[in-house]
Amino acid sequence: MQDRSPQRRRILKAGQTVFGSPAVDCIVRDISATGARIQARGPLWFPDSFVLAITSDGTSRRCHIVWRKDGQIGVAFDE
Image (cartoon, rainbow, N blue to C red; front, side, top):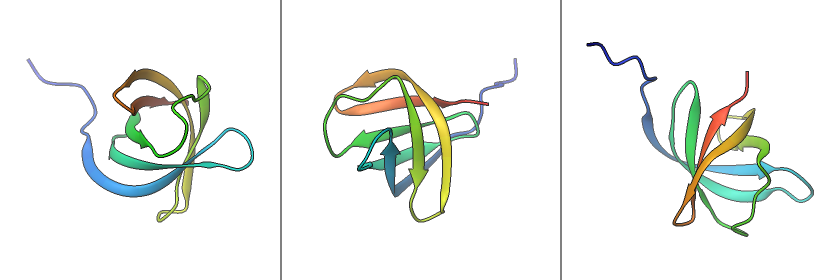
């Protein structure tokens, strides 16, 4: 049986969760074509959906939370 899940790449990049002003800093721990795992630097409360911006890449994607655990958040990118 072939694994069809997207390949996750471990990274350590500065990011921001944008759902108001100002944006909240975070660390992007891993990423794939369909989602990412981030570590919160600010408040532990986040709305169910927001924009994840990766500062060094200059990219941003709308996403929604699929899990939360120990100060980390798993998100799925919206199409």
